[in-house]
Each structure stands twice: as structure tokens, then as C-alpha cells.
Amino acid sequence: MPTAHPTSKQRRLRLYLAAAVILVVIVYLIISSTRGSVVYALTIQELHDRRPAIYGQGVRVGGNVAGDSIIFNASDLTLNFTLYDGALTLPVQYKGAQPDMFRDEAQVLVEGKYGEDGLFRATKLLLKCPSKYEAAATQTATR
Image 1 (cartoon, rainbow, N blue to C red):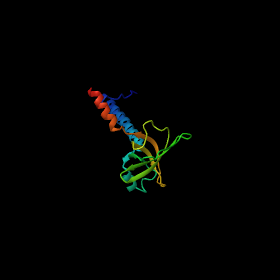
Image 2 (image 1 turned 90 degrees about the vertical axis):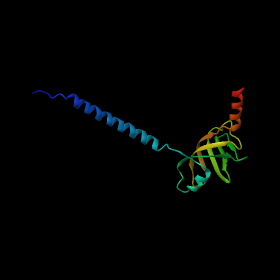
Image 3 (image 1 turned 45 degrees about the horizontal axis):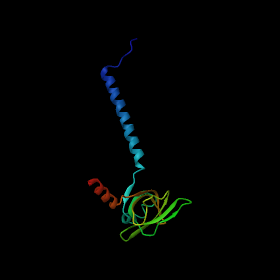
Image 4 (image 1 turned 180 degrees about the vertical axis):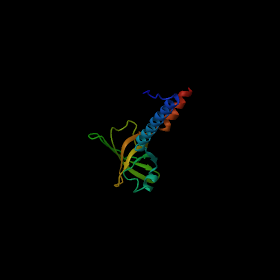
């Protein structure tokens, strides 16, 4: 009994189907892996406006560090401070080393979760580059 060999057209069809299945799997993996890691940047006003739905959600919030609000506990690496944006304030707690350039009035971006108790628990703390350093770098570059 002779065995039927697939024609070149059938082989090509199988190859296209296999490629399509692989492509669908790759797209699914990309979408499912990024779905939980999307973090939105908000102002303090936007954060307050989205209460209570925002509680426990991963978000980024930007603002300035309120003067004399920085309290760093070196024994457990807990950094507490207050962010402000206009008249609104946001108490923040960050677990980790205090960045060297972190000081009063620094512009920061914190990433973490906002609790029902009104405390923002940051898992990441990013400092914005002060404009005076940008101006100094420009002056140095033009010399």
C-alpha cells in the first residue's frame, strides 16, 4: 500500500498554520505578562479624586518633598516624608536606602500602593533631575 506524501502546497499550509499558532502564543504571553505590571502616573489631586477605587492599586505619584518632613530610620531603612502638589499633601513611606540627593523640596516620583489609611507605601522612589544641574551641564558643554 503506497503512503501518501504531502504535496508542497500541503506542507506550506502546515508551516503557515504552525507559524500562526506560535505567533498567537507569543502575543498572548506578552499581553498577559504586561497586564499586571502597568503603572499609571498621577498627580496627588488625581489620586485623591480616585478614592476609594484606587486603594491597593499600583500607581505612580509625583510631587515635591515637603520641607522638614523627612524622617529616616537607619535601623530598618524606613523613609517617611510628605509629598505636596499645590495645597494637597500625601504622606509616603518607603522601605529602602535613602538616595543621596533626597532632601527637602526635591522633586520625586514614587511608585507603590495607596492605602485606605491615607498612607502611600512606595516600593520605588525616583528623583527628578533638578534644573540647576541641567543648566550647569549646559554651561559646561558650551565652554
